[in-house]
Image 1 (cartoon, rainbow, N blue to C red):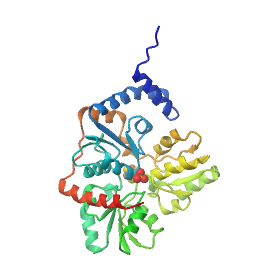
Image 2 (image 1 turned 180 degrees about the vertical axis):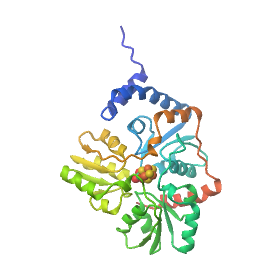
Image 3 (image 1 turned 30 degrees about the horizontal axis):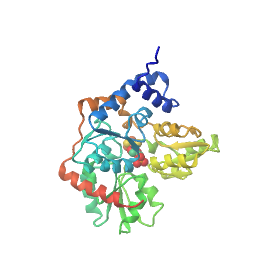
Image 4 (image 1 turned 180 degrees about the horizontal axis):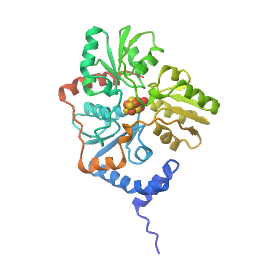
Length: 330
Ligand code: 13P
Ligand code: SF4
């Protein structure tokens, strides 16, 4: 008898070999057929899946065409030749893709995938801030609605916040809406930074006591923290950076043991490519990111829903703010 392993089975086996450290065999049995369908439909529909680093491993490693932090995803959205972008991330990310690629169809698997930072501020709030601080440039974190970006001078991400602030010809800068990213950036610049009362519901929950406990339990561990954490948490960490910067740190330095002070899925995703690093896994889930599942991605491609639209007048102004950011070298 000849062995009748199909090409689809072969590629599923190769994928599972990659993710078997973070996905159990029973879950894989359920995921494998969905992954296969998604990967076929992507080709048929000339679609790409842009996945944020907080996606679960079956999305991040098995269906994403490109995975990264907010800055990388924005760059990728601007560059892709595909006709359709499926944003495996939260709503503001899909809007950013649409703003940068208005001619493309941008789909989000769950329209309720929001963000506590994005919902903390409106366009009207930014107009009021401008009235209160005339002439002060407005730097807006990408974790905001397109309408908020449209009222801004320039955007930033956690990767380039300092470089963006430093690029502005003003001693005072409004940095909205994340008060912690603003305070963490203020520590590294001579400029005066005014901010807003927004915060990330995932990162604001980490405490310095928690970090000290990790340090005590694993004295040899390197502690990496995301700059959406409070400054007192950052002060306890060994390294601060965006999700990409944390991932690069582990890849390049191969610490024996690491603690990532960020969303749960990061450690799973980074551990797949770094089998020799031991991950201590503090886990604060982002409920918004976790709304995106394989089944919803499949549904999205089968039905070509849910399309993300942005009013073209808003999009044009928001695009300017995002493009101003993309021009900054960081
Ligand atoms: P980065 O991936 O850009 O670091 O952002 C983290 C985040 O919270 C996105 O929602
Ligand atoms: Fe928003 Fe925080 Fe979730 Fe990122 S992790 S999407 S900043 S709530």
